[in-house]
Amino acid sequence: MHTLRDLAIYDHYKELMKKKEKTAAFKTIKEFFEEFPGDEPENHLWFMTFCALTSDEEELTALERNAVLYFHDCLRLVLNTLRQLNDGKLK
Image (tube, rainbow, N blue to C red; front, top):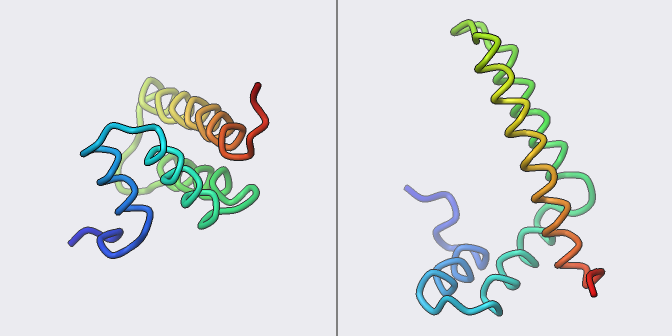
């Protein structure tokens, strides 16, 4: 079962995949930041990263740990970029 099935964010995403229009992309971004305002995206991302790095199930190699941290940092940049687009702060 898809956890987003009946939510507006998923409808906007499906519209984006179907029509390939910027308006649907911006609707998806806007919906995301309404659902997760402020620092919530980064806080959730850090919590997931923390859980992955401290999991007792399986030891991570140094390379895998570095990859998780690298992904975390890259995704934070993407989130910040999307936030700037959503807030209309770009020229």
